[in-house]
Length: 127
Image (cartoon, rainbow, N blue to C red; front, top):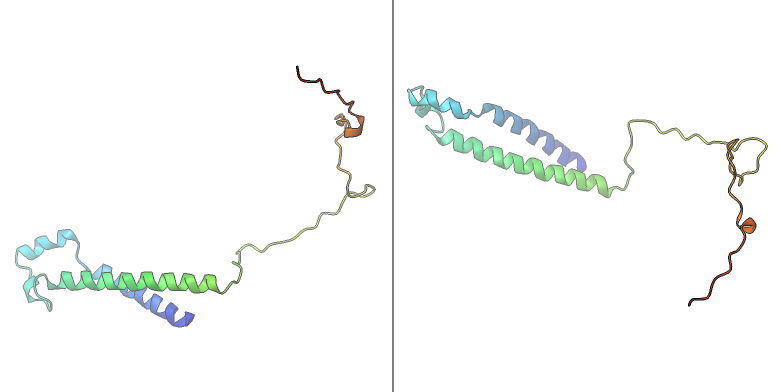
């Protein structure tokens, strides 16, 4: 299912790019006003613009729907997103000679007193 939608998506993208490149810009109508043969085209004098515009809109809708479908199918699979950068897990070992729960104390920095060493302040009754 995913492959079929992907093929339709790529074909719609290529056709959309081709149709946008085929269309004339707004400044191209000036040459048609002086008889460049626009009325001799397959679709008539203004028929090609309407046909190409309508076809471009339909292909843009197909492109949008296939994009949304591919996103839905990709998120529904439940596989985690992969990264371009390989992840390297490095485990840091605790410093030698110290137990695991003791934090490192920089030298020259006084350590705060522990809770048991702080004198308790008696509460004063409210007045």
